[in-house]
Image (cartoon, rainbow, N blue to C red; front, side, top):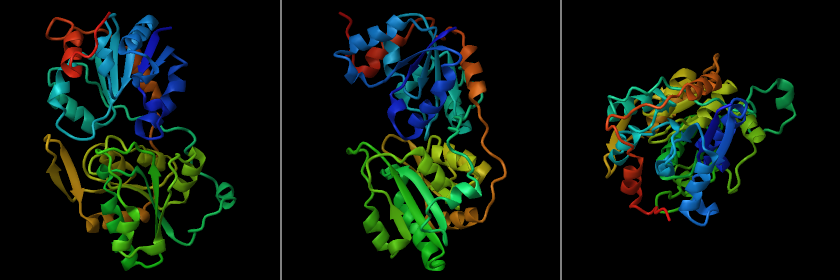
Length: 367
């Protein structure tokens, strides 16, 4: 049995990659001897101890889920597989050289695959996209199961948004869109926002939901959770089941796991027509294709959607029925990981030590 080192700190997080890592880890344990390393080095006194502990496992394959910074500091032979998604383009220039060192790149979306191919057009190990599997806790509930739950909004169509409250999620546009819906169809719809925990800093500034709701006169037609703790999956599954649609109004989105989870219970989803989430919404709901692109100071592309266009997409999605369900791609993922072989890079030398100094400012020194 091959040794597989999984390298990510997302496993303990209740959002995106945390949900993905939590779902795939039990399945990977059936096929590999697993070593698990969080990216957060605070559990070690020094970065050197962290890297030393990784090397002592002596893995055959290292699977990085999204990030891979400290992997560049391992000086043992291993096959490196990266499984990730990209939320916007272009791929950051400072990471392009590191991509060439990866033995296999598994994009989660077609959008990510395209960004990879633009960044490193001569890399032969970019495989076909493998979307993450959805945890089996998310399933279509029976009438008996639903009747035993208390739904205070059973006389309304529930529009659900499950997202971190940060600027990129563009909750302002969602609430503005719901204001249009609520004014057009009073007492017919209810907006439920489930805020996922997020580390607040100068890059994650939350929206003031009450102020925005007051601005559009929404009143009690919108509710949101205030707890900093994530909802239990069983409660989230219930919300997916009783909702008429699930919406992500994000300016960019790598995957949008709430959309996949909603689709797995048969609830249609809505997303802006840019980046990874749009691929899910095209299969299982409505895509708002009419958006305005804009670029940040680093040249990264985002999408701004007008509330009236988002409102139209939401109303259309609420009347839809989703007949198909997302595929469970875990077998494909395991096959791709297991079949990874070491490949020579075009530089003919091991670039990891060079990249480690370049990316970290040479903060790691072996003693």
